[in-house]
Length: 238
Image (cartoon, rainbow, N blue to C red; front, top):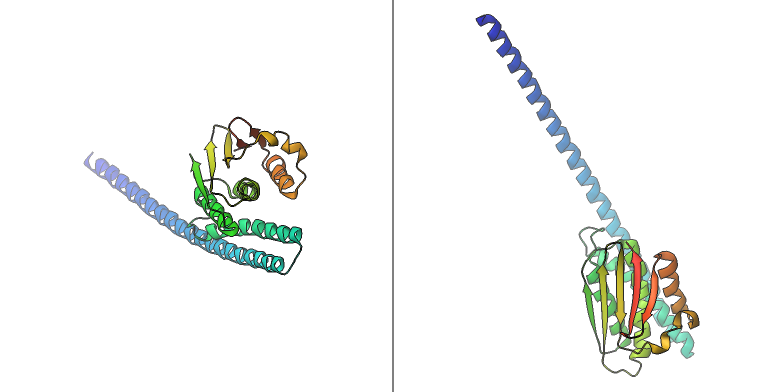
């Protein structure tokens, strides 16, 4: 009996040692694989940063060329068109600039981007306008943010052109709310929207077509004008 018990203990010990050895080997393989994946992720992030850097530089060069061209033209409409095109390109370039300063490319601060966008437009137009940016969330997909950036660029440029045309001080309130199934964006520059009730059907400018195309076709959203509150309301699905 003693011999039998001793053999059982020996076998059990051997099994325990084998299991422990398997666990150690498994842990080592998991650790090695984790390190490999982390290294590959770091390499991908580095490549993405380099890509954003090159795209940003190319866009800024394009915007600068348009600005230079506008300075050499005496036609007011042509000058305005070139400046508007330059600002649109800068809006996209700014997104890549913000991405360069972000540790992770999928962790871009929405609030930071829009604050920088408004500041860029106000500085370019020389207006004295205060902008209030509010949001109950701070991250959104890069694809949606690119489209929203172009939309807000058009709205802000319109504000500079019409709401603050005479250079008077003003304020823009920009709010984003994350709801259950959608994102709600509210834009208000203090101007009276009563005359814009049918703007969607009457506007024929490129900016208006760009706004509507991005909202309806690219973001599958809706655009409305709240006459009582003078809010421009945009809703897009998450």
